[in-house]
Length: 112
Image (spheres, rainbow, N blue to C red):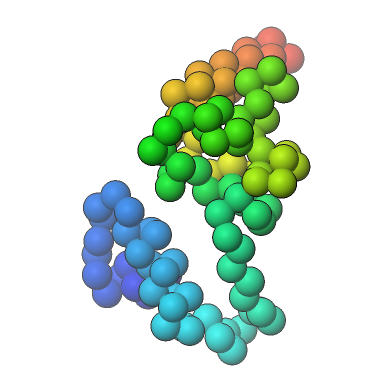
């Protein structure tokens, strides 16, 4: 990815996804040092739930956001360990911002 950036100098929004797609679809990581295998999961089925593609309607309508427990869900209703692009959904953005402010305030009060 660093090599691709060095070659393209692309700084537009979305270039990182393009770099990842290039590395994957052109098999640039096959045989790379430190990489044994590459597994690509469908959206909402792996450890990282990429929410950017879900912006056609609110996550609650997809059944992917539990606003009571304040967690993102995968399609099988398990809690997504990592949610990517939380800013793309209004309800999730509010939850995320509130949690961030709470964590920062707690940290500040414990580290005077």
